Image 1 (cartoon, one colour):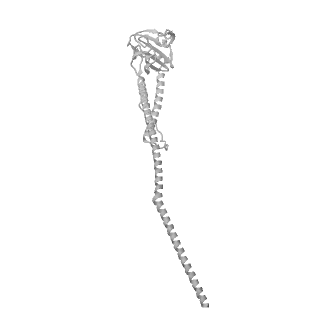
Image 2 (cartoon, rainbow, N blue to C red):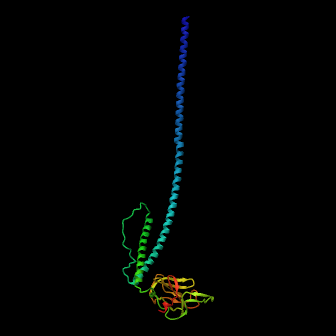
Image 3 (cartoon, rainbow, N blue to C red):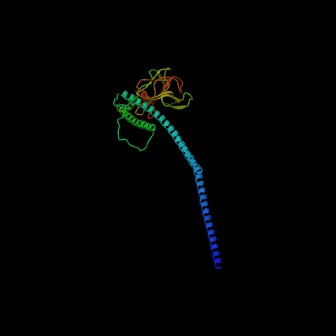
Length: 309
């Protein structure tokens, strides 16, 4: 009886141990399978990211960068176009300014030559110097060249202005009196046909102010400057027809109107008695004559005292 119980007990233990061993083996297998599945999933995810997701993200980043670069290039092109246009305008203005400066140079040279003042050299820049000032701003070679030309031109203009002012002072100091600059009639032959002052207008009969004197003569007769000076107008002007205006300095000017032909240009230096035009009938005129005006500080005055000096 005791033997039978022991055998039964041993048999139960063996069965229990076998069941536990089988369970342990099953758990290990399951764990191994889970690990393998997780590895497969992880590997698949990495493969998918590396071969599909990552290239897409990289492509998007490249496209965004390309679009940004295109925008930057467009901005650069626009700025370049604007800068080029500004440089063109600046260069054009430089050309105009240089041309005007050359005319001033020529006028100064003629004035100095006529006055025999050799110390006035309008063709040479004054000696200047000084340390170079570094601005710390980089500029294009074209812009730098234009700015350099402008600086040089400004120095030249300042120099010419100083010389012209000094020349004017010297020339005026050689005159005894400002009224001595002009005298006589602007014609060799002809007659005084209309005086300075109030008169009946020859076109409408109304009483109007005549701000000069008229000398009648033959069409094509010589019209002469009544004093030395510089021509400041030579061309057509409303009412005057073909007109010559001469600046004699000291605030005095003379005008010669209704000419048939002009013999001088703006900037010319003329001497007393020099032919500056031919008598004509241009503008508001009823016949061949020269309308002669004397201006003091740009206001017409009676020229009588200058005519009969």
